Length: 368
Image (cartoon, rainbow, N blue to C red):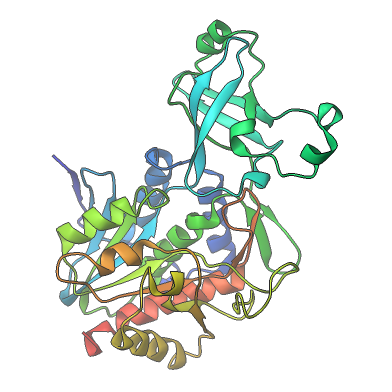
């Protein structure tokens, strides 16, 4: 049976407003947590602790999604943020104790090489480094090619397969990068798994800010988005909301190596409101949803950018196609270098994303 927690009271947090330091601390805590697809438990524990004072009920469904509900009237709104991050999984340990792996979620292989990783074993965390054939023994033409993930391995210091097994490294062991959250210049921060711990931070922050909400709100922290939008699909089917918003990150076009016509979103210019993604193969956001989100932003002087993406989708693409169709939208902070261990975002953008989600929910009954 799914786990259900009924909550008899709520507490007020800073009169419903969370300052940026609190928001940054929450993002840091979530970014530093480890939760590759299918192994989101440590992230879910943090989320549950954070949302408990602000909702009427918390339950964990059979897939592992955490559903936190504020009961009111109609319409019924689903807010979704996925908890999982891209990572790796042990596929094979060779006779010398080197770990061969598969990718969990979408990696650009070049970002993996020589990273320090954490093997999340039953005996606790074990550290390793990703290595490959050294350039000193490569042919000249091979040195010009990027090293592929299937040519890499993880060195955990084991001397044999039996030695690796003894310290807990086995087939199926999940693996994540060993990377900690750090502040950069201005209001910028860097860390791993901003896709989508930034979305989780947004959703938690919005729950704390909402006031005078007439709708019933299901805040769903989903599992296994990076491997097929799985948790969003099952939870949306069970909840069957009237409308939904997915909170995620989106890539930017404001750094070297990318053209503005390829990606027009810029960091520091406010939340990205999706019009369509993956050239329409993911979601084409209904006009009524766009009108609702634009009104929430403009009436509250929240800056925003319209995003038409050519690659990548979000939980909204699965929610949108559930049952007879659920009108859905996406709100994202611009984030550089996503699907790597060193993403970067603006805390001011993230704060404005929190405000936009909260303000949108407060007026949703006027549109649905």
